Length: 195
Image (cartoon, rainbow, N blue to C red; front, side, top):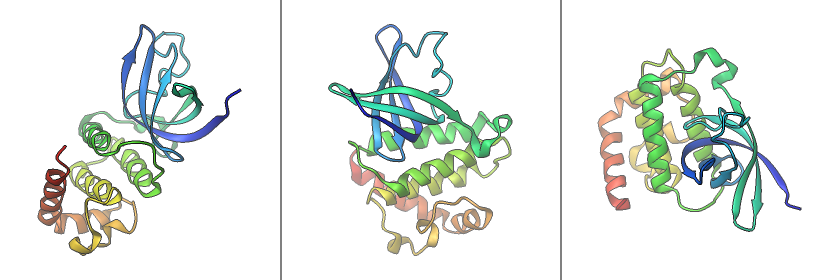
């Protein structure tokens, strides 16, 4: 019998596997990046189908088997508990780009609390209808992802943006003042990854 693990997860992407299954790329709070198979999730009767949509945030049950991880259950989480505020639009597109970059940069399972908090806070902020500073949030989030993975140095940028994961107005104003420096550092770090 296999042990079942409960954890929070952000669905960074997925791909079909067979006729009814999908393999999900989940950034989890407890295990880091996990690729897990969900059986029959593409059928209409699947209970996990909506919880595991791309760029969703969910509480998942995972089982590690001989051939890898399997999703045993999932329940959707909504930004700040309000299902009426989930947005599409520019915020969702910005989060999709962040998810894609994260998948390119993260290899293997390794717990990273700062990275999970960065992605989760960005998700909650960007998935609100009222978000207007999505571009600045995206820049800050990408810089924090690169910092969490060791590609950016907080000292080089001389900012407190890497000491926390919040996206409040004061933090975004600070980021706007550093916009050119942040973009230059981000572009340089991404170029150095050769990805």
